[in-house]
Amino acid sequence: MIKILIALNIIPVFCVMNKCGNQKDCFYSFDTIVCFDIKSNPKDCFHGQSFIFFKLKKYTILTKKSLSQLLDNLLSLNQIDTLIFSNIYRFEKNFLFSPKIKPDSKLRMTFVDSSLALYNSKKALPDFCSTNSNNFISIEEISFIQRIKYTKISPTLFENIELNTLKFNQFVNTFYLKNFINFFNEKVNSKIKNLILMENENLALDSNIFHRDLFYFTEAIELNGNIKSIQRNLFENMTNLKSITLTYYYKFNLFYHGIEWIKSINKDLDIEQNRINQSRLVKIQIFTFSDSRNDPKLKLFPDEDFCLYSDFPFNQMTMLNIQNRLKSNESCTLNYITLNNAKLEIFLKDPSASYHNNCLPKEEQISKCNFDKMRKNCDFKKTYKSNYHFQNLSDFLIFGDFIFMFVLNSLLCFIGVIKSLSMIVIFKNNQTKNSKFYFIKKYSTISLVYYVINLTSLINQCPFDIGLFCSKIRNSILAQYFYIIFTSYITFVLQVCLNIVFVGYNYFRYVSIDKSKNRFKITNFNFFFGVCLVLGLFLAIPKLFYYEINYYEFNSDYPKSLEGSNLIDPFSINSLIEYSHILIVSLNFISERILIVHQEYMLMHTFTFVDGLPNHHIQKTFQHTT
Image (cartoon, rainbow, N blue to C red; front, side, top):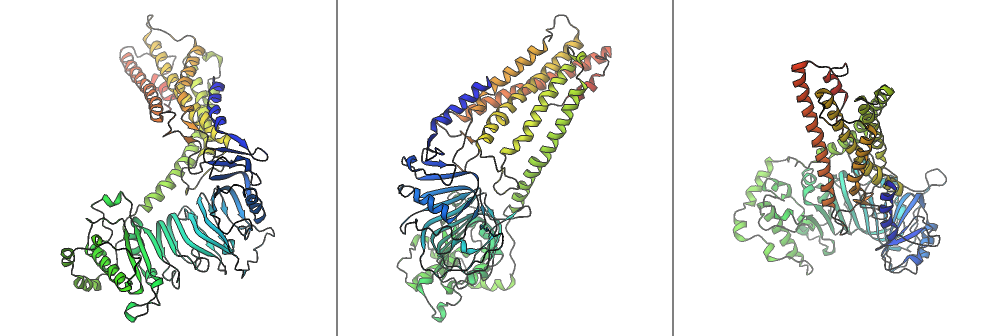
């Protein structure tokens, strides 16, 4: 029966797999071509897809030669502009400098489950000498987005590259994990227009991360996530910088640490002294999410923070813009910022500046704000209370999850294995075949299998991308089938069997105490356990169809839940499973309560012992497993 159910789960997978490639080591499905070797030639795989995912079977070094060969194979596929790589653990210097990349190409390269480190065949620190070549290779975007191991690396990795967007995800600087890039202090010749740092955790942005030579031509910087602080002179002399975008939620703590890093921007300019350069206008943009704009309690710039912005360097051609601004959420601090932005735009007479009149504070709102008086109060306020941003709670939850899942859970499962083995050895005697101790032996055997599966289920675990543990093989086909068949399906079957065995044990003891001839008695134990197994296999069938193998969606779970699929209603399936489980657990609990009440009644009247053992000692032998 299990083989049939496995086959039913595999059939849909082979229906969507269409093998192709020079060695049939690729397949195409929907909008993605998936290859398992970087040397694959997926020319004949193209059927309108726009992505190629190289899900490499082993850790690979990405060299200039391998990338050139790959691009040569893809020259005929002009429609494909995105290459995704996994399991890259080394990069060769100048690996991107390939003549196969066309000047007008919109090539995008994304890396997941990889290590950002340079390949060094001589096992020594390479001699990184910057070239003076003006021949730039044009690439649209390079992204390092999920589960990337960052190292200290030379900026010459991006030598002679004209890159529109460079994206790094998940720089982490917490007590349990430190994973962020560090660049050597070396010269580099490159042009990177946009820099995006996403999903940061407690990051202190300094010149080791933001290499000034590498990002000298950068025009736009987007900082998403918790940026703890920014080096005060980090953006000094960055004359090509146009905008810096921050998330409103995390800007509080960043600004409370000081805005000296903003004051260092355009430090050589001063409108009041007529040192002006219109092309160097810089906008500090605060981005608010659409749902946050509907919160009337949201104060982006409360009046108690006025002193923080009273010396904002507007005179250095630096603006502070609020995207998706909420009109009803006004304050004197916000009015002060809005007025200074408007004065700066009028002074510069910038025709490209769009400033709507409905965003300007009304006269009655301005009249309520005494800016001169508020400035005088700033002489007495030098410190700011840091806004609580749940960073400590987030760190605690991630670290606590690791302790619970990988330490306590493994320890308890190991103890359960030892206890189950000891119970099996104790009740191995054939004399217990037709007694209630036979239930204990079977219960211990099922529990042993349950604990072993729980121990091995760690191969599928990756609860947090920035956590302390993430299985390296969880995305393999075998690991995903293991999760579907054993961790999901068989585990539920065992839970059902354990609960039914416990119900049977309680009923057997009840009949033994009652001594009534009219009671139905369990005599064929093997038949009883067979019924338990068949019932568990039947009730758990929906578990097999709740997941499917994930071949190419790197930003989804492995295996992928069918939640949201049009083929099945996962909520109905999940509800069916949960209701059946709750029913069996409830029956277990009710039977145990009935047995205890009946035992107390019998002991009060007859002081009966069963099989020479006190009933409360026997009851302590069992522990309910769910």
